[in-house]
Image (cartoon, rainbow, N blue to C red; front, side, top):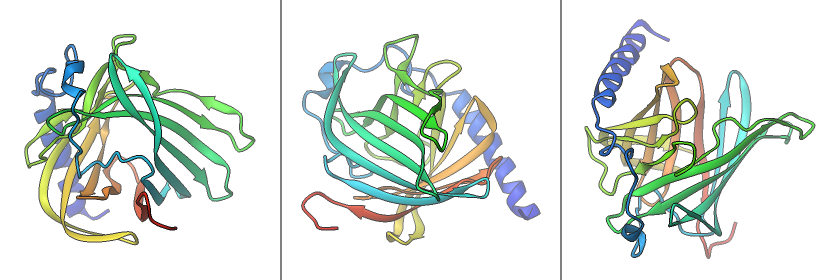
Length: 243
């Protein structure tokens, strides 16, 4: 990494840490959590599609290893704290086809269009299929965990929010830093993307950036400090289309 990029990453890390540390828990998705009544008439969020049957094919690298990821909005639901959440399945495979990680995420949009993150059940696997661990699993309302916001209704620069929270296990936070960003992946090209910085108190030296495109959701993720992970959208499958 060049000295210029290193300086930018360190500055970004400092800014994000300072800003997010100052965000009140209630404003960032902490506190007692949202009222279940707020989810009776959900409003779809185009930056984070949750239509059942939608699927993303993603490819990436981490620590020199290649991975493929398939993310699918299932037709299944789960009640979490009185809120009917949509189950989203993520399966990450190594280059040899073996499953490296499988996760069921639970999301729900409220009447304002905010998408809330209500928990996940995750596991990492050895090549022989045996489970390594289930670290990172959490559910809002259990063991002190509270829901977070995965995507605001109207993302705009300087918006900061907690995405998930269970102390010591799930503490991701995000900061919207740009509208109108340019992004190009095999699956989409856009000059109107939303860019976020994402960071966790559990890994204070790692900073990632993610780009979201309206109607596509997240299309690119890469580490800008403290890591070398990069994943990009290859193809989006929408319900009712072939392929």
